[in-house]
Length: 247
Image 1 (cartoon, rainbow, N blue to C red):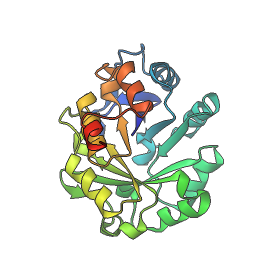
Image 2 (tube, one colour; image 1 turned 90 degrees about the vertical axis):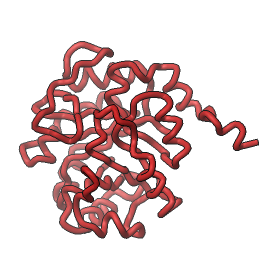
Image 3 (cartoon, one colour; image 1 turned 135 degrees about the horizontal axis):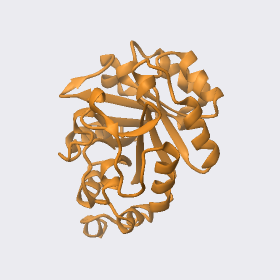
């Protein structure tokens, strides 16, 4: 299972996301580094663990208030070995093209920003399945965006993010049942968990419930997930209980 750090961008800074209440987000306070500048935060995360991917939520773009394309493009140039997955409220084919033209080639199509499935189809046509993820967004049990994107697993690309917004930054733990349900509905899809990860025990639980990757922020910045734990998952060592299950 891959660990994918998250940076949430708002007003040029990395902010602390909590429960999807975006009007209340404040600049992040990280034990890894001082300040909240995007380049400093990414550098600190990569010093903790050489992550292969990073999830970037451009909250200004999602809310229709400008974007951080230049900032994220600079991150990609500085760290070309990292796949920066961009969630920027992409709602049209032109939105996708603008980010691709800026040098960002891993697109997240968030269901909350969609009116139908056309943007997902456009993104897949433009860059291919290996570089597109569908975020199935839920808040307080409500499916955000077109029901068909949530319900018709045949539409899903190879990566699907189980984004439970009210679990983000909550300290309540991940939505394991939802992740297991999505994984069972289309077994060949890689399901990414998002929201609520607190510690190594949550990572073990996610791995046993069908998560192929997990998005994490708070538990990295307050050091509840340390370098040793991250290295264990990066090395592919068995999670608790799997040794016996594997015989």
